[in-house]
Structure formats: structure tokens, C-alpha cells
Image 1 (cartoon, rainbow, N blue to C red):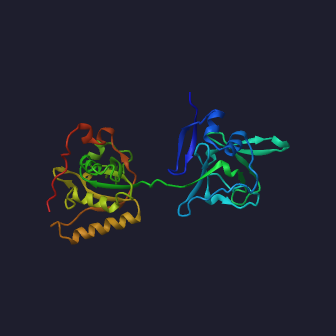
Image 2: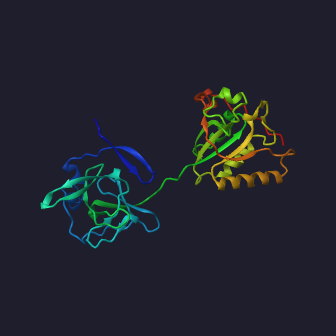
Length: 317
């Protein structure tokens, strides 16, 4: 059975379970230069001041990876000049990504630093480093490979209530793979904890049927989502969308940041000034509260049923 280890991925910010990497000496010799093999697989030490330890690209955040398996090891901004002749760092990217072992070789007592995934010998750690850790990870340059830190875009949440959540979710899911990452329907804006659909329909919880949209703002903007929101329902009917009547069907935007609040209020004001609707817009703009995910049979309702969305009506302007 293949052994798994937990490794921190600096690009995603997540801890991931990956396979422990094991190769034969013959395989390592084919993949590595003679000096890389001697140092990382045979616990050698490069001559001080002989390694260059090149810097990552200047225009991006940089990291150093394991030359053997590519595991993220050290951030460029944790590197300091120790004067020892070897690259020195005051902390690893994550304690998960390295392994420390006592080393009594050469008549000394030291702490060896190894790659947690492939057991490559990296160097040693000493207690004479700078603040804030006081550690000096003294690492062989041939054990490291510089790389730009390509962070995946942070997904952002948006929450909207615009009537029956089956149809609202279906409308936003048309933009999957175009910036919308995921959606889920649920209940928010009320006072009852963990409400059921039946309780929400009783008009006693204060919750609205809502859709939480996770999106990549580098591909679709919050303003784009607002435009979709305004286009799929009638924001002038209080506690109602078409034949669906009740406070759970109210029109509302639940903002997750001050920037979302500003954009929502600006878009509502522009819509009012456009005189597109003859009646006043009653959409609430409120801070996001706890979102209670609805029962599973409500999620992606129309997709599961294999039918076209039917619960949203043409907007009367």
C-alpha cells in the first residue's frame, strides 16, 4: 500500500495528502546531476560558497522547492545572509514539508533537515538564527530549485435572494467555468438556527431563500454578478416573486465586504435613476449572516430533475 504524507501547497494554501516518493538509487542517478545525487541521496555536503542558489523571478513572490520531488520548502523572503557559505533560512514554508532527524555523523551532534516527501538530505538546522524563530536552516544550494510562487486566485463569495432559490441558482450556474466556481442554495437573513424548508415556509424564521455563489473575481466581477441578479427577478415586489408569496421570497443582497456593499448600493441607485421600473425598488442590502445550506434535494434542483427552470418570471418594467 502506498504511503501518504501531508504536504502544504504554497500555491493553494491547502494541506494536501500526497504519495510518499520512493525511488531506487539507479532511478535517482538518472534524474539528478552527480552533485545533486551525492548531496541529496548520499547525505553529502557541498563546498561552502560554491553554490549560487539563484533567486526566483524578481517580479513575483519566490519559493525554493526540493530538487528531487518539487515539494515547497522555503520562501525567498525567509532567506538571510549568514556568512557561512550556504543558503540560510529562518523558517520553512511549513513544518509539514520537512522532517528533522538527529545526526551524529563526523563526531558531531546536529539536527538533519530532510524533505518530508522524498527524504532528500537538505542540510542541517541550528539555534543561531535571527528573530523571530532564532533558527538557521543551513541548506545545500544543489538541493533547492527556485520557482515563482503562482498563487491560485482566492475564491470570493456573493449571496443573493431573488425569489425561489431553484431558479436563482440555475441562473448563476449558467456562468460555471466562466468565473462562477460553485453555488449552493440555503437560508439566511433570519433568526432561527439550522432552519428546515418547512420552517422557512411557515414565515416564522425571518430567513430568505438565497443562493451563495463562489466566484473567481479575476474572471467574473462582483458587478457582473449584480447585473445577473437584477436581470432575473422583479426587485419592486415586496416579499413576492410572481406567484410565490412570502417573506422568504424577498429581494436582497447580502454583502461580504465593504466593497461589495458599495457596489451593491451604487448599482441599486443607478437602476433607480434609470427609471427602468415604474415602481420603487424594495431590494434590501444587508451584511451577510450565517448561511444555512438547504436540504440536498433543493441543491441544483433543475439539473437533478433534468428540466428547464420554470420558477422565474419575466420582469414587468
